[in-house]
Length: 289
Image (tube, rainbow, N blue to C red; front, top):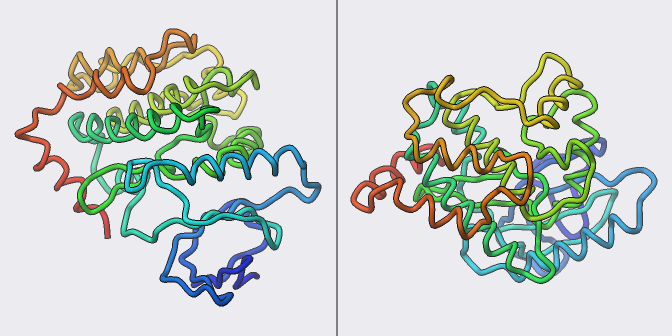
């Protein structure tokens, strides 16, 4: 068990075999800070220098994301004690995965549209960087909802390491449900991969079931590779047609047929009237601690 990683003392000990974790922590190496959220990803026993270089490049790029934007900007990052770590502001938030678990049934389409709009803004900022910063592991666990009901995306800095863990996990039957076809086929990843994963996340949110979820790991991967999912109206007939069209576009098999983050952001804006936005966000924010 570890109670310290690099310069940070953890509020709760960490099993040093844990593949990934998040902990409240404080820096205690002479540069004392307030509490931070420390995202940790365990490194493989045989470290790949290229993977570490990519992590450091992604973390450096993520540190240039806009301050207070929907893409969480790291405060600090490093490698120590068998883990890559990234420190973020320890703001009171709840993951979208927890919101989906706590809410009875599918989320209201208006909530999903607002969350998607915020995530699209985060992706727009990340993808506009040069080179583009691609998340690669977008899922309900990577989206946090704050007390104001705004969605924020974390994990950009650990994206390269998260992708390895996600691919490994898919082989034992977990996490592949938010894969893009190119991820399932282990083909080159582009910005459009994030848009597909966002589409899979939103499908799950508004229908109450993931789009790709087979009885076995292989069956799930085949469904992802073939982009075989039940049409939204068949599963959730109350989802507005405009949102159904957006979801189908995001889940297009070909990356070139998916909208970009900026296009998506503009397409989502009319789905929630301005006069309703405050009320809808307040309902979402009530889930945050």
